[in-house]
Length: 411
Image 1 (tube, rainbow, N blue to C red):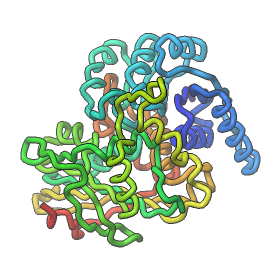
Image 2: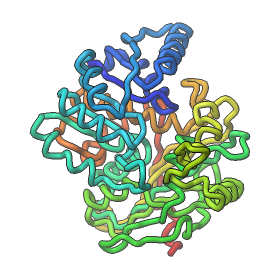
Image 3: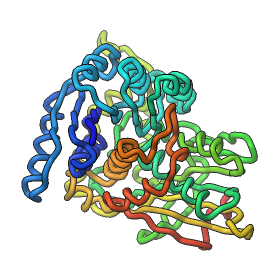
C-alpha cells in the first residue's frame, strides 16, 4: 500500500483517480492536485458518491492546488505529502519540471506523454532520456508513456516479442475512434495538444532510418474489430522512437489513426485561417496564441462523455518470424465503449483508455512487479502482470493469430 499524487485533473486525471480509488489495497492514500482546487474537489466528491452507491471502501483522498510549472511549488507539495509516486497527467510541457521536483524530493515518477516545448510542436524522448543517470543514481524509477498509445501499445509489443516472435519485422499501431459525440467539431483530449500533434509532418521507421511525409499524406482503409473499415492516416507517434530502439529487429514501424471527413474539413479550415498557430500574436495590445484561444472556445473533452456513443479500437499489428522460425502475424487489441466508460467514471473512452493504464502502471511499481530504477519506457518491463491487471481493471484485450494484417498492402 502506498500514497500517490495525481497531478492533473482533466479527463485522464479524473479516470485515473477513480481507478486508483477502486483499488484501496494498493493505493492507501490519493492526493488529487491541479492548478484549480475546485476541479480536484469535484472529482473527489464524484469518487465518494460512486463508492457510496456501490458500497465500496475508499482509500484516504485529499486534494491540493499546485502550479506544475514551478519546481518550488511541486517540491512544497511533495515534502508535505511524502508520496511514493507522482502520476503526471498534466500537460506535456510540464514533464521536466515535475521530473526535476521528483529528483529533488525523492519521488518516483510516471507519465502518459513525452515532453514537448511550448513554442515548438516537436515530439521526442531525448529531453526525458537525458534524466536517466540522475534517476538511476537516486535509486528512483521514472516510467514514461504509460497511457494507451503510448503505453499499452508498447506493452502489447513487448508481449508479442516475449510470447510469439523470435524476430519482429513490421509493427503497425492502429488507433480507431468510431464514436459519435454529436458535436460539429471537438477533440477527444486537450485540443491544443491534439491539434499540434496531427497537423505536423508524418514520420515512420523504415530500414534503419526515419521517413518523413506531409501531414496526413498517407492513408488507407483499415478494418477494425466490431467496427468495420475506417479511413486511417499515418502520423508520427512518440512510442515508435523507443520501440525501434528496444526491438532492433523491427525494420518498419508505423502509426495510424482514423479521422472522419468532417473532422478533417474543420481541421483544414482551422489551419487555413491561422487558428492552429502556436506563436504569439498581438491582439488589441495583448499577446495571445491562436491555438490556445481556439482551445478556450472548443468543447471541453471532459464534457463529451454523456451522449457519446460507439467505441474505440486500438492495437498492434505485427509480422515477423515466430518462435518456431516460421512466418507469423499477430494482432492484439482492445475495444472500449464510450458509454460504458462514462457510466463508470463520467468520462469518455479516450480518457478512460489513457487513465486506466496510468493507474495499472503505478500499481505495477507499487506492488514490485515493475522494479527497475532509472528512466524507462513501458516496453522495458515485464508485460504479463500489466496485461493481466489491464483486463481486470476494465480494458480486456484480444488476440488474432495468423490473420490478415492489411497493412502490408500499403506503401
